[in-house]
Length: 121
Ligand SMILES: [Zn+2]
Image 1 (cartoon, helix red, strand yellow):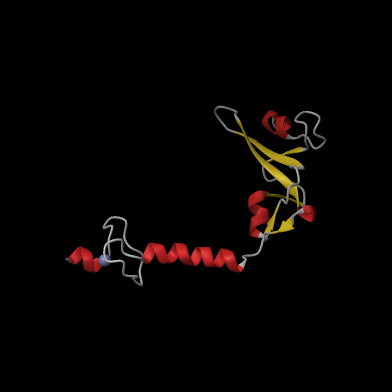
Image 2 (tube, helix red, strand yellow):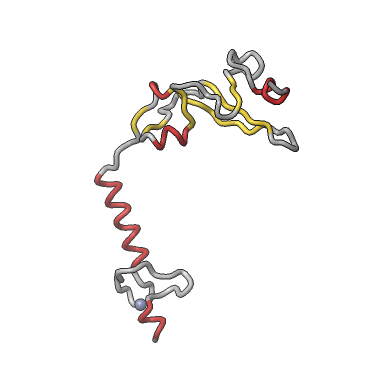
């Protein structure tokens, strides 16, 4: 084990406060926020249980990713009808031409600032 690995290998958290493993060495049952998200879960208010750490080659500045207990994670909040409605309104606004107020079946290009018909004159 190289020195760099020894520095970030701290399963008991004596050095870093919380259990720390080298990048990709995280034990089963722990996941990063992004990994939880991929499983349809969110940390749900729990504090990071551990972390994985990697030292940048040159600066030796550590890159840290917090890990959460998968068993304590909660499902991502499901979309409510109100949320869907809000998205609907937002999408419709993006399809509405600010000049002729017509709702198009495509998103108004930012570069034009109006629908194709208005742009064509
Ligand atoms: Zn228009």
